[in-house]
Image (cartoon, rainbow, N blue to C red; front, side, top):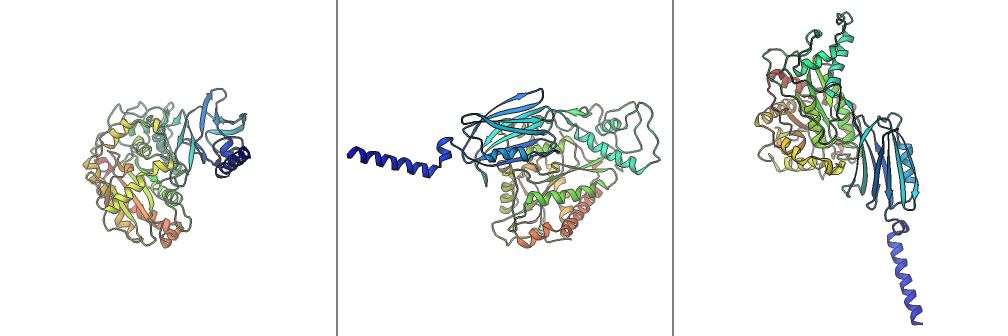
Length: 469
């Protein structure tokens, strides 16, 4: 009788544990709650989110290129099969995904690839709205040089607009000439009519196919250049536009469900179109679609194309719906100009935690050196740019603060590029959220930002500025 009572109590305890943890936890230890795929020309990210940490072993097969991953501690469930349908036909890197039960408690994932890639597989602890994440970042081993692409685009626009332009001499390469001139290296062929200006010699960028700069630790700084004594610029002026957040990181979310990452990308596209309409000017986007870019990679991208300006576009948020108005920020050497500026900088600098970076692949020493190189001259130029933009934004909407504020934004720390961060409005304010979603306001804002850029260049010609790399 006594033994039967003990057995009954033990059974009740075990049953309680099963009810508390769930059958899936007892069997395998984790349940898949979501799967996501984020394609882009820079890299494709695949994320498996679970309610417990899971482990994976990977091996890459070169011919045909594919990545096989054994995920331990789970069984094949419908959520994992959803990955197959989530691959888009226009994904630059993934051609398809196969998934199957390889062994009890082990699911094998085979990612068929369109080209050779450098995979990074890592895990992320719970943060913000996410639980545990197993992340696959698939970087192509070779990509087109972004500076060459910008120059080629501008040259194509010029050639389309001048049908009667002289035909290049046989054997000449006008695009190569433009790239070499942009970097300061001479070529034997003659370039088309004035498009770019002379710079220092022997500082040409790498050939057409180069290591991917989006991979942490794999980007090279922009080449050193010297000022050109001309009253008028005839080289390609590049403005780097940085739509905040993206991919796994939605940014702030308004009361109506508007995501910051979506509206700032729309505004950046509108501003890009206006910049590209200017003579000898081209916009470069750090992200042109919905994917995540780490903060330090955004800076590296701008430096790689030798950008003349860096403009990071965001939408502010606060705990209450009351705050409103746009703001412009520059970097600070001596701390934030206000407690609000410090709070906003801390919030924006936490994007890497939400978006998810591979800490093991990040070169801490290189990043610290880069972020410590910001100069007083760069900050002064940034304040001038911010002031010009703030004045124009004030003509189309309310301002949160009447002057440019300063704080330690990680994304503004390029030592050789005037850089500002524009908070276009408070997405947490219902009225301003509606304006941010409005096509009319986005057009007005893009026009104002373009006027601010033009005002800055009118007073600070790009050829009059040194670069210190």
